[in-house]
Image 1 (cartoon, helix red, strand yellow):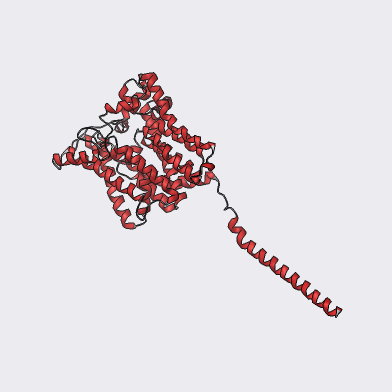
Image 2 (cartoon, helix red, strand yellow):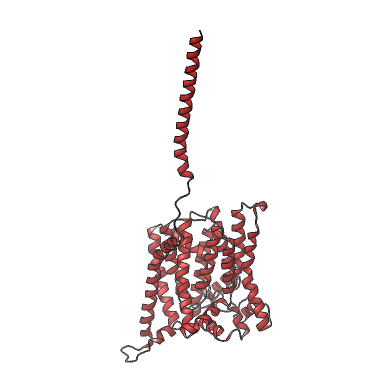
Length: 425
């Protein structure tokens, strides 16, 4: 009996040992399956990611600069009669890019804010022109360099943002669709659009990464470039709260970084008080440019009225059609940020919020007179989420064909108008 009992105990011990061994093997096998999924993916050096962005967007950047250069060269023919023997200087080609608001920025760079009406133009861009003038001899030349470098930079940042959010092909399409938009030549001109968009995109890039102080710093610079920059505070706060699950107990001191964004506006307001004795000079200056706060639909209804009141092939009618078309197309794209097959997902809703806020800002200050939506077709370049929607729509070949054919044709026409010194936006 004792012998049998010992055998039973041995069998139980052996079975337990086998079970433990089997359990250990199973656990090891499960661990082999689970651990790789828990491991962090191999990180890629930051500079390599930016190099990838540069390599992806540089062909677009270079092709558009070459196209602009060729059109500038060929526009010389418009200054000659047929078979004329007249010639022009090479420097005249650059002078053709010095149009309209360009002179406002160069005047500020040279003499500062001597006229209250110039307070409508925020200071960072002309400050950079003044800083680089000793190198490039003229603030206008410095402005061209600043704008074109900023354009390359904004293409890279936009690519990085869309690449992270979606995929490489969509990122390239987004940059391409912005680069050939009918008024995209203003990103190459000595205007502040490219600098502002570069800073606003970098603000977003750091927001999405949770680098709040960097986002605030770029937002501050953006609000020193254009008054619209102050509205980056709304997407900043939304994205901060979203990343902290909209719970008060998760909020940390770094939310204060958002306060950096309006500081750019505050600094300029203080300067206006010191120089022009009017702390709101930048706002009051809008009267000099015949703009005033109105209901959101006022500009659209006024444009339609002007189109109806003038001959269909008149200067006034055609320009109102251009501005109205830009406004309506962008309205459709901003709407698609919220609804439809290409809408932003909940975790990317901050882009839609930016698009909506900035679009409202652009249409709330129409011009009084025959061109209520003037400059709108240029200012919509700042609505980068609309171009992200276009990039998503570009998955369809037919859409690419229509957009690129129409947009590039209009871009060439509008640039030639600009180079000839004719009013375009």
